[in-house]
Amino acid sequence: MGRPLTATERRHRGFLTAMAVDALGSGVWITFSLLYFGYGRGMALTTAGAALTAGSTAALLLGGLATGVLADRLGPFTAAAVSCAVRAAAFPCYLLADGPAAVAAIAFAVASGDRLYWAAHGGLVKSTAPGEERQRAFFALLNSLRNIGLGLGALAVALGAALQSPGGTALWNALPLVNAASFAVAGLLFHRIGTRLRQPPPLPPPPGDEPAHPAPETLTGTGYRAVLANRPFLAFTGASLSITLSSVAFDSLLPVHLHSLGLPLWLPPAAYVLSCAAIPAFQPLALRLGRGRPALRLMAAAAGFMAVGLGGLAALGRFGPVGATVLIAFLVLAFSLGEALYGAVAMTLVLAYAAGGEPGRYSAFYQLTWGVSGALGPGVHTLMFSVSGATPWLVLAGALLAGAAVHLGLAGRSPAAGTPRGRPGEPVGTKGRKRI
Image 1: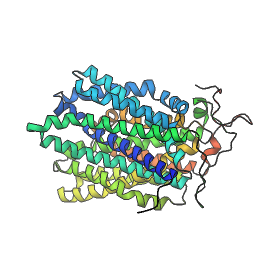
Image 2 (image 1 turned 135 degrees about the vertical axis):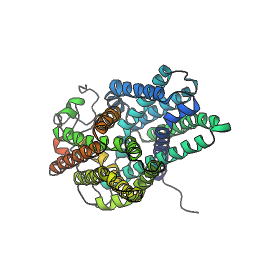
Image 3 (image 1 turned 60 degrees about the vertical axis):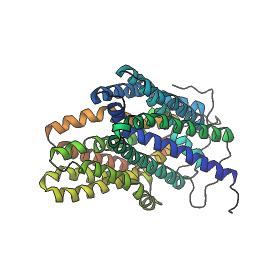
Image 4 (image 1 turned 90 degrees about the vertical axis):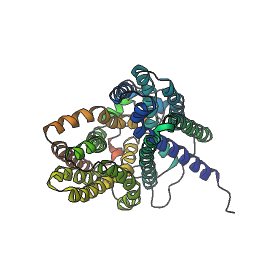
């Protein structure tokens, strides 16, 4: 038998288990949701899609920034536990939804829980993993788990479709209940760890893994005024929008593009499964490439790899089925390497920009890039696609290269340098400071 685990090791295992359950549950539902309503509930896909979009958009507009305030007030572990509780209560309600209005209301609750979780996401890792290198490893692992969840979701969809008659409906309806149970388990783990931590003493980083941008103790946030006054952070967030828009296009528009070229029907799901497998496989490589290198330069490299992946799609029409299949495999791998790099370093930069405190607000603001991309991306992408099949890929590749240039321009400036300072002697996290 091995030695007994220390309290810190048990806490880390519980934390990773909670994060894994949340990532896998969210990933499965992203893939599964539309077909659940089509096969499990007998609802038209267009109706279900409109209802889910309405609920998610309302959560973005009404709670996109408010979740950051809530995460900072509650603390990351309590906020994560609340987010899991909301989703655990909401998912079973899908079994009772009998119309688009009910679906939209439930989607609003689920999306609100998601947004609160992502606002707390950076603070969770920061509380558990001191040092930028360890934080990159945590974020890389979580990115891998989320993509494994997406892959499992694709398998669940295939299994549900195969078993639709006679037992398929029961399988479809079981998934929201299983998802609710998984979020309940994750919520309990987050609550348990948060109760034990409360105000944990900071763990010393291992030798050679000191925080990249240590913040003076006198730094403090002043609500979203501090976020909006941090111009380097705003530039970083704006440049990252090219990455999130490209990721949404890769997931939603690639199957349409391949179908329009008359390529085999099996190719889009094969490309998707390849990507879901490649991102976790590339995470160790991404961490090795990034060791000792500035995170903003790695963001530029991520955008460059993704630009290669998308730009090459514009040339698919010049190849036959075999050549196109080989080219797609190469482009998917290039894009996936970019996503692996992005997943490892993006949130470490958000935490560095939030060095003065209030990581919930910074995380919530940064997550708006994903919210905006998810809401506007499909419409913008299909509009460009109506011009020509190559247009969206060339435009997005150009946007990625422009974003890479911005990241390189920011690389010479420490993220902490753009964080507004509080009054001398005012401690970080003072409850009485003015917030917006």
